[in-house]
Image 1 (cartoon, rainbow over the protein chains, first blue to last red):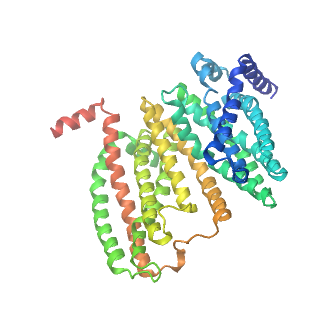
Image 2 (image 1 turned 30 degrees about the vertical axis):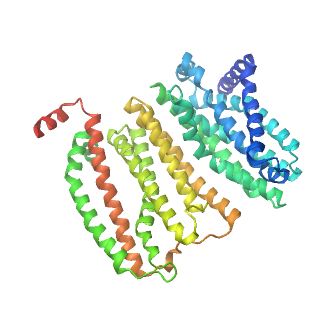
Image 3 (image 1 turned 45 degrees about the vertical axis):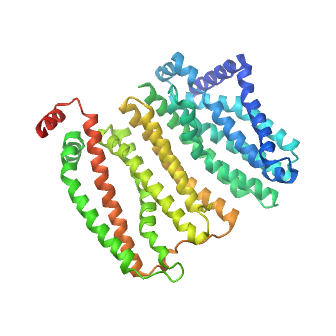
Length: 225
Length: 247
């Protein structure tokens, strides 16, 4: 048990250290997020009333795209330099190591993305109830995105048409998360309870924590065989 | 004993010959059932009291919608068998399922849209069933894109099997989330047909058509699987013998 925890924390801190050595790459998803948010008023006009209605939706969709794009690189450098093979051969369960990598990735991109998303919500004057719902849905939702996305990333790592193919594989699987989050925010705006949607999101989170790393690990094994 | 027999048919060569044997049976069953079902649906069944003659599109729409989900499940099951027991035939069958399932899904979407035009006044509404069918189509397209992204057949088969299984876990979640979303967003749309209230003379042709779609699927699946096997095994002796024999 102890050694497993050690293996997890070694991989986790390794990924965090690697990421902190190239900070520009860490900032890219956040800049992407802000740029895309800034596109919406140009498309829909600067009508404040309309924008307020779609603010939560555009934050969520942009977070979805940013997380897809940032996930793309999660296994790439390991795959290229052979670290993935070493992980498979290390004797530790690959599921555990993959879980460490995904959680490191979420802490490095998911959490900052959440902060930026909340700031965007405040700046665009989202009501407090909706902000709270947005925070909770992002808290439960973005780890699900990372965990599900990692499966598809493991399947497509090192392929020529990687990015496009990845979005094609991932985005349909992301739809339930988007749906429940948006329904929750809309309910909060209307003053209705949002427990049911949050329970669903939490359920999906538990499901993807338990099954996601297993599927990701076996995908990586297949890619290396 | 049973396992031995199973393994025998799981060898590509035996499966090929079995498929050659079975294909005409399924094909003839399809032709007969299709003629009976279409006659029953288009001529024999009474016109709907509300929708008039335009309801008759259900004889294509509903069977293809049923098939779209059935084929995905089948594809995931074959994928799982191939992944766990390394059965080559299961890989071949899973791969052959995908374009068929995607076509059924597309057919369901197109006929639904054509039906929607006189019923709803537009080609497309974000109805729960249409939307989840659309997402199912995306899942099929993703599967096919992943299949074609690899050069190595084994890797392609195993990677896409994982994707199919992930999709399989997600399908119920997607289905219910879409239903959840649509009931909150737009109130009840025209409910297409409430199952038990259908007239028996309308139902029998529908069931015959559903059976016809099944046998059609089986025959085309076997044909596709045959050509897949030949491609898969193109370096083996029995394929070479087979090809020189027919020449």
